[in-house]
Length: 251
Ligand code: SAM
Image (tube, rainbow, N blue to C red; front, side):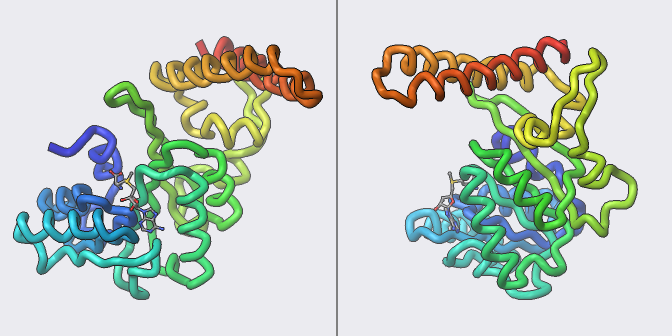
């Protein structure tokens, strides 16, 4: 059975898609996507030998070698022009996902792609920034908890193809909460422009946990004798105050 995290990605793939799953590891997502009939074909890309072998084995054993092509290569290098219409990249940091997309974008590999479904483990703000800069607009953001970890799943389409939702300009313009508190773009990039609009329990849990981590850093800064420590502590304290204020207004 697919994990809830990978199932959440699968739920965002339109029926009939041709998928490329980059950093596919055991190719669990493309296998499920084809087996459930959501995708007609898939490419499973892997840069490392171990996971690449694991993907080949999985696809062979599932008897899907005719429809899932397992390829070894860096990021989007493994896809040919016009071959796929949806790309999933999951289980890596937002910085790495952005750099994979960036290289692919430069090589023209995102042409003809109608949807990106991304699950960064950390650095979600970096990825949102990349999407805005390259004219991809978020149509949905999900947040879920599994085995004690919290994951965000970001679904984006090319800006020119999004007709019913909000534009990037609208999504990231300073957002006024019911309490009147204004959340500027820099913070929308961190919280997620859709997640903040419909904050669920897990969203609160994520940011409470982030506050806990920040409090630990603050405590160690308070003990530090480095001259820059008090300045850093001040900045961190301010960040924590912003998060607390936003959370309390979202209750
Ligand atoms: N996507 C799967 C998931 O979410 O369960 C596997 C996630 S696993 C933690 C990350 C995988 O990405 C590893 O198997 C790693 O080898 C692969 N990877 C890292 N950088 C990559 C790159 N530039 N191109 C392709 N695969 C990459």
